Image (cartoon, rainbow, N blue to C red; front, side, top):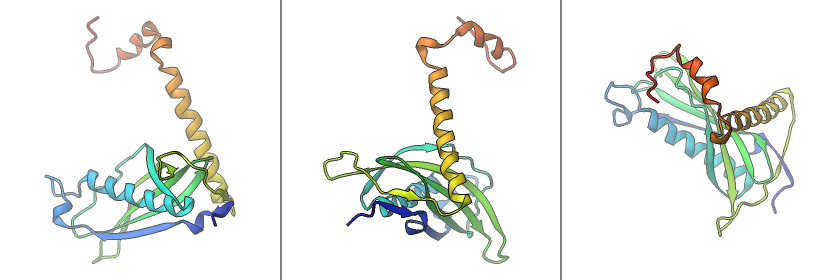
Length: 181
């Protein structure tokens, strides 16, 4: 039986993986696409654990690669549910890399994946609510609400039907572009 509410502790996931030469790009650093793939996997596991259902990735909010990851480092990904709606949840992710010889740990990436629970027919289904147990959980939940509102405002501001060309052309004078209309 699916619970009506769950804590984020109940669905937290942590995975670690040693970075191999086969994961590297042409410059010898771990390929960003490989890290994104790992992030998607852990977001899926976390969301599925919370919802007790199959989940799909609906969106990824801002992925900044803060520091490169080296071959031979141990990468640890941490995921927890930060926000829930009726059928979707925001999974917060943190990526750290550890030099296994020195023990030095660096924060390499943080991101937010919006995941949606689906049934066997591919229809979105209700998920358990989230029990907010501490100040950090409340801060993360509220931060997700604000991030969602800001994203909607950005989308609305740049709708093709409402975009004011003249107002924005002035802005482009500061950039390395040539406008040929």
